[in-house]
Image (tube, rainbow, N blue to C red; front, side, top):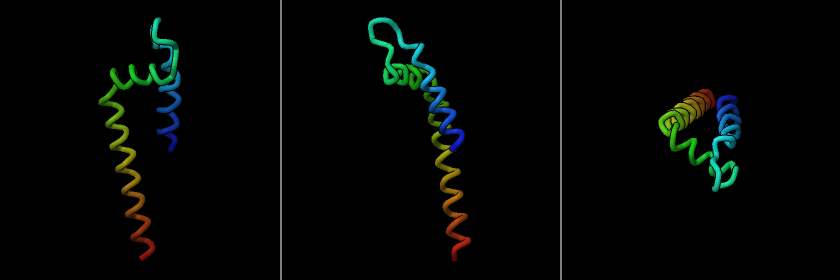
Length: 64
């Protein structure tokens, strides 16, 4: 969860990278952020998903 919050705050700070003519909006900055850092975002999604799946299966095995 801390990683997700850190990534969200980092993405929110990217509003400064929005350029003239498109407005200084979070959505536009996120589009540029994903454009430049797509691999890092997918890697983070895979790691977070894997950790969630691991925790869920570990919890289920304890309940049996």
